[in-house]
Length: 510
Image 1 (tube, rainbow, N blue to C red):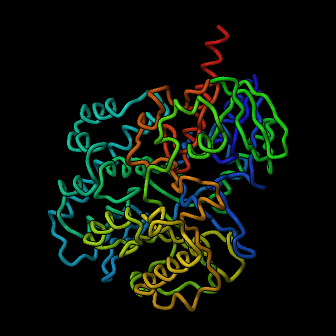
Image 2 (cartoon, rainbow, N blue to C red):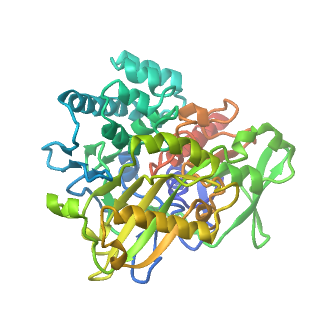
Image 3 (cartoon, rainbow, N blue to C red):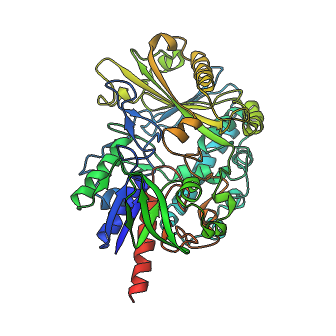
């Protein structure tokens, strides 16, 4: 039996690997000249390897790493020391070393009760993440079952709120300090005041790097090294990934997927077709003028979220000095988080959905060249800045170059408050706005999770209550981030989709 896979992002590569191991004849088609999708390292500046979109390592499941022998094929993930520091605009911070000595706090009004609640909060989040992590490989799991699982394990407060409450509401059960609430707000997709963000935080808590549960790290050579290791693994198994091969249509015979049509006009028939493109592309562009589209709910054919995110990259001639980091003896490795005020988070949760830039940017920074000499030329550095929670459409329209420049200026103004020398250190910049996600990376939804992680957890990502990865169109399967398992570089969707097809074929054969 043969399978055609649309897209050589990490999920497409993972699906191809497992299908090939199960005896399928697999072909992977990628419209661009490289593998990876959003998990790429690109030479945005001459001589640099820039982790363009996907940011940090930790979510890729160890089962996938082992089965695909990714370390043998060049994957080198590592932890930084320190782990992270959360900075507030007034110079306060939460500093977390990697040595296990515990976080250090510079927060003026922090009480012992708040600190105890903060620690208990993260303990419970970690317990819940460990409970649900195995269920990412059980695609028949439902949110109702997971709530019950959490309740049975003596975590009733989280069970009540994981899918029906906000992260800020949950945090309020543990502590009242506003800076701690601001800090926790940086740990979930979307605004922490909105329903579903408890699950978003726990999803991130299922990370694991170098055997350390809950830990995020980096990859030598940038995140694209993951995709390249996957490509090499596939080639070792005899699977070819065909680059510069754009699929323009999925051809149907009635309600059954039959073939792929390519930009050059060639058509190829397949027993099964997998699309890793977002739902907007799959159902809005690749399938045209078919009655079968009427069976797809409209929410899977349009962008359901008004909130996206962005990323800015800077090539540096020197590392800018952060006085607060210098005072701590910080080595500029690890993750640096800028947390807005709680007041701004609450206000921006409304205004951003209406198309306005946040009043205070929430940002996550890394300077990977401090610990990885392969990503920048000698004597140079790269600064990656993730900007959380941006409007997908700005002021009612598409992002323009002027909007990109405005975002760049807002980021620099924010950075200057904690690193006054930042502008003098920058040689060049590159803005990945929501519109760039659409035009450069073919992400029509402008959402890196394809569907919101907080609004569509677990079985809520399934179409018409069908089994995960199935569609109302026979023999057409989905394996992108919009499916069960969701966003981040996990490999879960590719793995589970491959297994779903293998089980279906076994059933047909019997």
